[in-house]
Image (cartoon, rainbow, N blue to C red; front, side, top):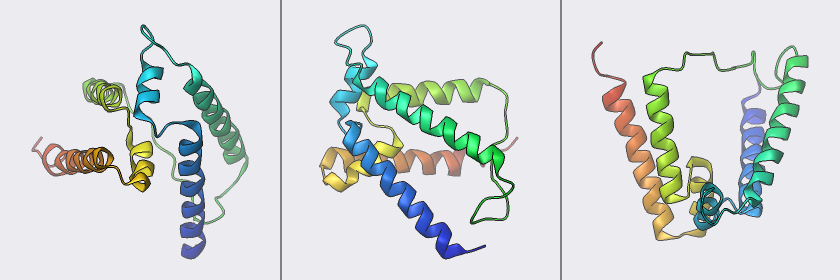
Length: 143
């Protein structure tokens, strides 16, 4: 396993992802809220971004299925399936409400840090605090 190659590949993928978010308009919270406002002043332009992302992901999964092992690791680390339960539905609802209110989800929020805007920095701090609280409180509770 070549750790340097893993890091360089991850950095390149993250850079391409961030540039794609910036070029597509996903760093503009007003544009994202316009896309989510399907019963108001709906802006469908981000649907093309979503379509492009799904197409790239499907192509990547097709290639992944043909490979026997990844280029820079010993094995693939694919997610396991889990049932749709109350925690998943509640977490999805909280994510969706937060995305609609703020116009950011984690990827675009992190990419937007490069803009140096105070609301973005506050959002990322709140996001990290929520993740930490979840890991320290929810995951460590008994039973």
